[in-house]
Length: 44
Length: 323
Image (tube, rainbow over all chains, first blue to last red):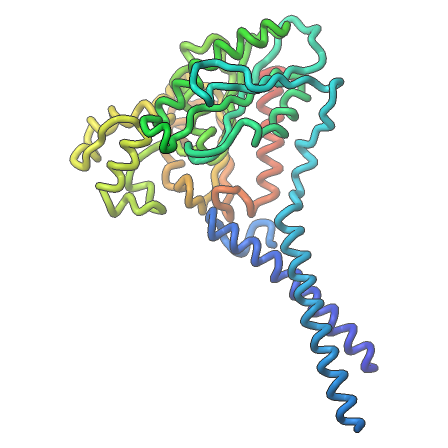
């Protein structure tokens, strides 16, 4: 794997993790205000 | 020299990763906050070919005694069904305009739709209670009927609905005031409206631990003086009945569609069993949709939200007649 390929893989992983955490953060805030589970249902 | 260059590149790429993380996090959070997968279900391209809205029609002397009337463009029918939608807001806030999309959607289905405001509990209205709000709704319906008639829409059947506080008021009208309604009530649909007021169910407010707090809150809500020693006695049932929709359910109660979240902190989930049990005990046609992962916003169970919308359509068609 070339260095460029490694960097692209890392970028993709970073984007996926950030996207999941971003949605989870909103869900956690809404659950804090209104009640609800963090996981389950329409996950994310 | 080569090592220095390598180090610089590492720092640069580290910076790029952090920036990408922050941007992706923010974009994802914004999409989650703003995108509703079900918004299209109730979206109406509102124009004169769909209907017209008449706003702020007065039904009483108080500032909030106003309603908006959405009438369908087709005014050739002999009679129309009325669907009333009462806004949410914890009995202290909210406005009929909050439900404009819902009202337009109902109107687009051929019904006359009404969004009704009621006097909210605030510093200027310290005597206002759930009971006085429910009485205002009761007083508004004859005026809604008369105003619709003036516009050429004769109303001969009615559904009432609402969310949260509006849900409670809708249930109260449907069960308690049905007999005196100038328009026969055919059905009620609501979500997350408290239907009973027993301290042991209101755990999220700590009322199960504090009879004083329970007596205070329910005194304010009912407009009656409730003392701690009344709680758990027949006298308590008597003073709380006027604002407890489930207590008015009998075998003649109208078909009911209700949705609640199992983790609701605002309308405690413990209150729901009284409503569901009363509907079952009296063999009232009903659908109860429980959102197992959601709270007051019914926010974590999209499939069940879609089912709720589907059921609204089904109920309207069955009990109110389609277009």
